[in-house]
Image 1: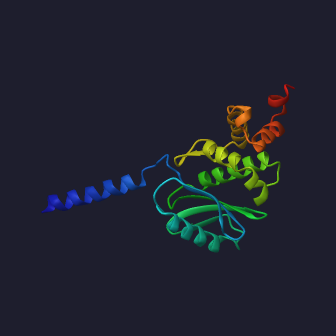
Image 2: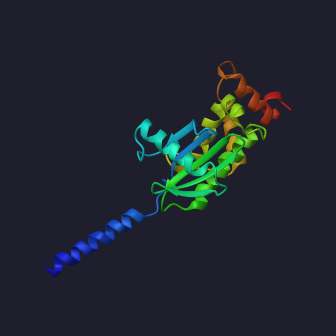
Image 3: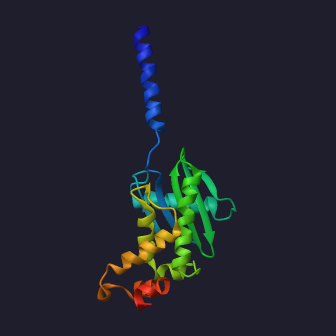
Length: 191
């Protein structure tokens, strides 16, 4: 009997260790909502909220809890949420409750600063909607499958510009050409 009790205790300790073991999968979601709490961009990296209905309910809950506060971090539904607002946009990076807030904040700041450079400091809803492909590329450069790849906005902006160059000019949108030429005139103009 004593042996079974000891085995159960070892199993619980192993289970606890496995649950708290460090993971590269740091980010559960990246969200951008407008000032009405409507989704402009959402990328979920796991199945914490598997349906669109559950995701929208979570987003509404986050927005209601954060849109009137000046803090930068919240614990909500067992998740760590770091966020920032600017003009008519709310940026969120979500991780598990045991995730390092500084790592999540590094992702948030990298995303915001990258967009700020790409949008020429005009980080607001209309400019973002006109440059959604740049947003998609930037997020893909920063986080892949929940793993943080990059936290330097200069590197992200550079890679986004290079990825835009990989597309033949005839297949690029006017916005892609304009963004690339504004950010890197030497790439487009041979300067």
